Length: 189
Image (tube, rainbow, N blue to C red; front, side, top):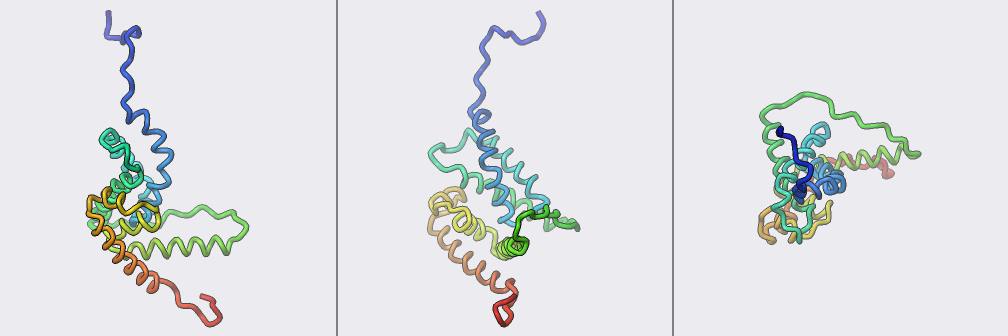
């Protein structure tokens, strides 16, 4: 007989990672993408880097502690990849336009423009916060993780995480003050 598979033999069950991964990917894709943008990855590169995060996650899914939340673990992977990306980007700069945003079909274009400006301000201000501090700030303030989960995901003591959060808050607030356009008389910017 040839080398064809014997269909009478039971197949080995798929590894747990292969079974769990599609649901994890679908549920956490927006979270990872947002986290990478908040860590300073340009929109044009965030999607590719998001997929890299999930490749690493898939390769190590069987090594995680099932009793711990997945999001801080995914954020830790995203942080490492974002840091590597930023180091490479500093060595080789590409000149190009940011990805064009899709037109907003909402009824309130002024509100949509204000929301877009606010998002841009937050991303620019986050860019001024040192990366290790920014990671703690994003995980705690924007993603709502507990400090214990943050410390574990980043491999730092809890007190260090609190210290980084305090410093990041100050850096972020100063950056927002510096970047925000001054108000004109009458409350109009």
